[in-house]
Image (cartoon, helix red, strand yellow):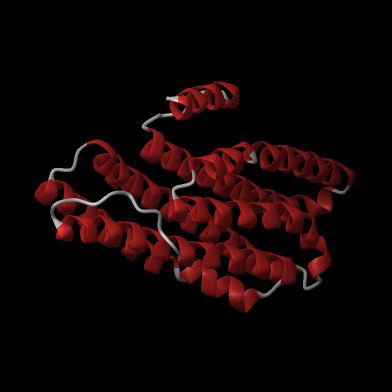
Amino acid sequence: MVFQDIGQHISRQFDEDLESLRSKALNMGGMVEKQVENALAALTRADSSLAEDVATSDYRINSMEVAIDEECAQVIARRQPAASDLRLVIAIFKTITDLERIGDEAEKIGRHAVKLAAVERSPTYFMELRHLGDQVCKMLHDCLDALARMDIESALAIAEGDRAINDEYDSLTRQLITHMMEDPRTIKRSLRVMWCARSLERIGDHAKNICEYVIYTVAGKDIRHTSFDQVKAELGDINDN
């Protein structure tokens, strides 16, 4: 990935420290993205072997979070960054926390996929999740790309896309509830599918958070708990200035 130039410092080592943080965060993002893709594939294909692998390999992501967290702390202690540099370090610190939580959600999907594959080998039952999962995977990929390029326009558009994921999750939940009411024998199985859908929806939330960190880093604006119309207006004012 090509990183946007975030400015040069008198200390060349400082630049290298910041670039190292961002590079490692993106590498962690790539690993997390692969875990989510594998979790979705295991679920929709009823692949118990792949599901088991996803469910038992989260420790790698956890280890990366701990290592990058420590590196962030060292940069703050040694360099005492200010302004946009400090915002970048804070954004990376928060990003890896969200990435670790995405990994946790992928692990949950893997565990449910193992049990679902054991009771039904046909993948047709899990295809209800495919479209939602594809949307979530795309959102995660795009948010990491926005982070790599520090592209606030893309980040805002991607964050807005979380609404569509929430709507689809709500629709799928209603379908599953109706299915359980019509055939109580499917309750246990349907609940597992619902929990997988919930994990996918939560991954979308974490991807949205990462987009918000990109905007915070570049524009210095904390857009949490702010309407998108207001964010667009404020970012427009910043660009005009």
